[in-house]
Image (tube, rainbow, N blue to C red; front, side, top):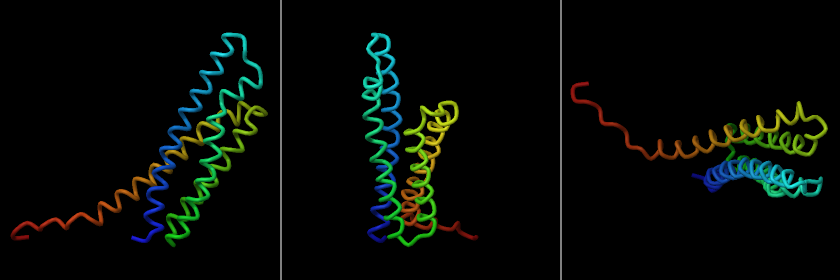
Length: 148
């Protein structure tokens, strides 16, 4: 296995975990904002602070997506390159929706969480294929039955 394939496998796994944490940060931000609203202390700044971990990790995930694409290029495998490129496109769309969501909440507000689940599914599928492929190559051939 090339070094880039090993890096790719672990990086896609790390990104999958980061996206799950990111979804948790979105929920944390929503509940924190609701708590502040209940106390009557929710202004624009307080609302933004509720989502700071979500925004910060989201930016890191987009940067990680670019690295994933570079690692895919290093593997010289067309399937990895194609799907990693798709991850980057979806991540760019995700961050643009996050930045502009308040301007069109019925469109972008609905698409933002749907896009993240597509990203999560794609990353999870890529990670599964990486780990499964390694096990498949390491598995011994099954013995044929006598007389067949």
